[in-house]
Length: 543
Ligand code: SF4
Ligand code: SF4
Image (cartoon, rainbow, N blue to C red; front, side):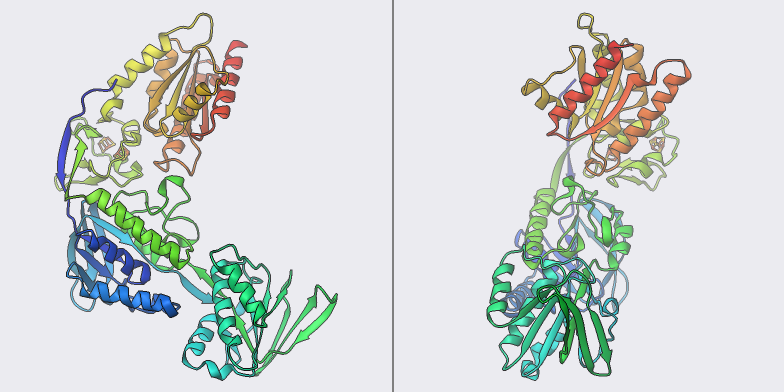
């Protein structure tokens, strides 16, 4: 069905907005600027150095150098105390509204990188403690160690961690760095009272051992100890797993761990940018197609702490990845795209907004003359809008309705002896690859199997299913991606709903609804593909 594809050259803005001026944001800005693009770097309203307060030693020097590079670059415009108030448009042509000390300014940018940082919150409440001179949060301890480490000489310090929340390598790293700094003071004793000690990060086990060699004591518990705080007097009582009896520790200072999580600002950013939020307030769904730095919208990238809990090294890698993705999109300021990726026949359109609402990639916008327009840069050609449009007003390149109906008809009528004919609509990202795998590994497949490729299961129209059955197919199978792994996020969901509707339509006219099967798979699941199709064949043979 492939025809000569007509291409169109579209001009793109090559300016880039980076939201977040912590270390990851500054790194992203310098990397993008090094590729020759102008960057507007805003701090999102937070002071420029708050997110980098935990950076120490060599890292601090590296950050200082990064900031100097950014300040010195004539390609980076740094706007302090500035946040984004709104955004509109499509990749290559986003408009953003920024507000700071002065008036709201509008900028036009081709891509947006969100680099909100992780935030930490002391967990003293979870341990029944009030922050005081003798009960410190991890951040308070770090600040005190920076300003006057000698004040801790001769003190005993107990760290509580991994008992009020799951163990976390980032939390452990901060604790161990503090322990090391304390052990360098005269006559200090450090106790790390922990639930889970997760050392599965670069250099963490070495740090753990170094602290132990310097005298730190690790007390691993399975339940929270009893912690008492009366004025400045503290005690921690726990069942010692080695001594098999209660033990009381009376430290001079208790340091409570901090929960590390997403910045609250993420929800507002997701709303403004129309990007899907992931779990726990982060800005990336758990979808393999989004890794490492993509969102459901082309041209909007998320890095570091905006997408998950990341160590500094991983966050900086994200910044580099985002710079590569920006360059891949914006190139020299033009992009060649197929003219027929997804085309709206405005003569048929009744302006119902369905396509605008269902496009998972934010590729459809409303033009001034009150009609929907599809951005050829943003559109991923999934076809969800085309199959949802009540007026059949949208056509998708090679997968237009005329071509699809013809292919489906040919597949349904091509008989292989007495074998039941099964038309399997296969998503090109999963079902099609699974089918190829099953075939190349010689796994059993129905003799009458005819695969029909679709760009996404969301392109499988009820009309195609019914046409296959009407033309003589004995059964129809829709092989979609697993939910949560669909490249178009909701394509599998739409396909499942349509399959269920088609089954109801069959049942209403007295035909077995089992002639339609909806299943999900992954590209490496050839064996599952074989099993699902062979089960369908056996079922059809039994009728
Ligand atoms: S879904 Fe179809 S009819 Fe509705 S606005 Fe979009 S193109 Fe027009
Ligand atoms: S084909 Fe998919 S990405 Fe393109 S406009 Fe339609 S729903 Fe959006």
